[in-house]
Image (cartoon, rainbow, N blue to C red; front, side, top):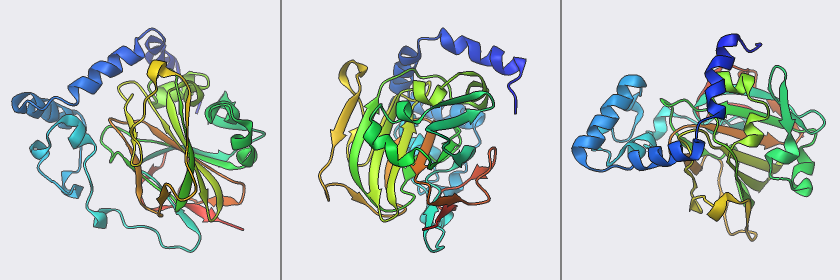
Amino acid sequence: MKASLSDYLKSTPFYLLPHHGISWLMFKLARVKYRPAKDFIIRAYTKLNEVKMHEAVEEDKYAYESLNAFFTRALKPECRPFDDTKNSWLCPVDGAVSQARKIENGRVFQAKGHDYSLLELVGGDEKLAAPFQSGNFATIYLSPRDYHRIHMPIGGELTRMTYIPGRLFSVADHTVKTVPRLFARNERVACFFDTEHGPMVMILVGAINVSATETVWHGLVTSKGRKLKNFDYQKGEVKLERGDEMGRFNLGSTVIVLSTEQFKFDDAMIAGETVKLGQRLGIYTQ
């Protein structure tokens, strides 16, 4: 859908805002543990965002020590059954599909009139980008009410993690439609895996209020001076199974999954559709 005047009016202020300063303040606020203050923050948050507490392992929202602990709450496993179709990949998060398409000549579709470079997205390494030049990508947006832990679509061994510095534009629908190269401009963490179905990349994209991305093997991913930084891993050092938690957002954002061309998305992976962790993302076809 083409961007409207309203979309541009909502997006324009983000060019002027001090993204990292605002996100730093939110980082501190989300970790306040003083009970009256943190209960007030959680109460206000849940009034603005409908959260399904009956799905959480801890259903009492005030039992969490901070807004961040509440935001990254664990779910009851039975609430997110995993698809068991042969050769299927799991949807890694709860959220809404922004796009799920083929990568065309190394370009990734963002919205009507906007695309961006695959090479730029993964941090500029041509060797790492090469397997996906004609592959597939799925971009999934997590809203504030969603579950914010990220799981593996398929089992794999981690080979590299790259922290890529950048801006922290909102990743809401109006900015996706209007801000050129949004996902290649925002701060992000690219995690490269070898799997039984070939290489896969999980890209955790930051956004305004979300400058705190964690992985289960590293914890909070940062870089002094916000410079690009690579972390390399030996074979067998970090191995995760299908469905395992691999990371989390401390507040919300977007996940991009890259696969090779031997992959076909499930029919449910349509732009705008709501998706849940564990449903079928697609099928490896080779």
